[in-house]
Image 1 (tube, rainbow, N blue to C red):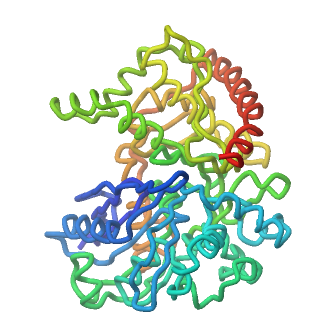
Image 2: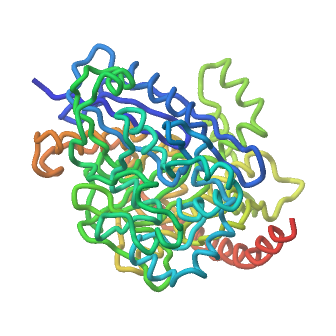
Length: 504
């Protein structure tokens, strides 16, 4: 009998459930979009109740009709919420795009040597992490903190609902800036800075092992039989690497979803002690993930769709296509460089390698002859140039991937894939079904946890390459020059971003 696993991936934009068999085939899927809440400037929240409804709905739809051997999970990192002693959320989850905790990174740097904290946790001083969010909650919502029993990440809350106690896999814990990536436990220095005790956090466990078997409560949540093993998996990004079975320095994963990420996995951690320009998180199964993630990937086009794309949305609904497909068709009408229009895609601040919570989105060079196609293409190119900056840091640290494996909804658009290929000057493999790579990664960890294989490489899943895109030398040179102007523009505007924020 071929084993089948139900996987649930809680992403920033969508919750996706998929049934995956031990041959790596995706048998059935279900997804639901999550609404991003922005109640005030800088806020970017999810409703915990909305997340739970989406998990239950998608899991039950995907699992129906299958005999499920295990449930395995992946989840986005950095989302933090407050939960009371009865297990009820008393705040929304602050996502990685929530920049309100930005000023609290300075407090962290005052309380410790930031390089020491980075070497312990793999997380540089950066507003996306749970540690500055803990400080923000204490400063801005003391009445809620008084009622809170737990500071929980999003997956912790999901597990609390499933099994009655909060647990967290090492991978998701690693993205909190509270977790020691070598000792694989909550870090003493980080807890001291946050002024919280371990019992205010979930219990960390290895994500490539079975946590427990689901009781009736958990089984009902996922739509499976009581007694089904639960495997916590890892964070969604590392799940993509595991889903593609990609490991080592020669190949990296580029994912273009809500955010954009360039990431490699190895059996030893890699840190940028000099500049703290990359992250390094424990992933699962004795692997560490390192690279850079942006705060602004496909989300910039989502903003354009919601604010300026009413026509495309209406037409797309009438003809049965995605509004993004129509937007990308428009972008194809503009030439490389968007006729001198440049976009700094920092609408929610930026993570790597800039580490700047104050930066904002800027269109530079706008003229009367520019049209919507130029603006959309400039959005696409801006995201690609941030990915290039991450690749350059990895090269400086001795990791020089020659091939990028691409997934995520944004890379369904060939134009965006082409721009990333030429901006990075690396071959790009567009993978079929890449939007469910995290689900496949969760399944891979589950099959290891169940004992079907001793090592992930034994699964032998083939990479389903839809298309290989080869860089054009002339366009590589063009984007190299554009990148120099991009960095010049950012460095010129960076002091203004901070002063504008301080005066607002």
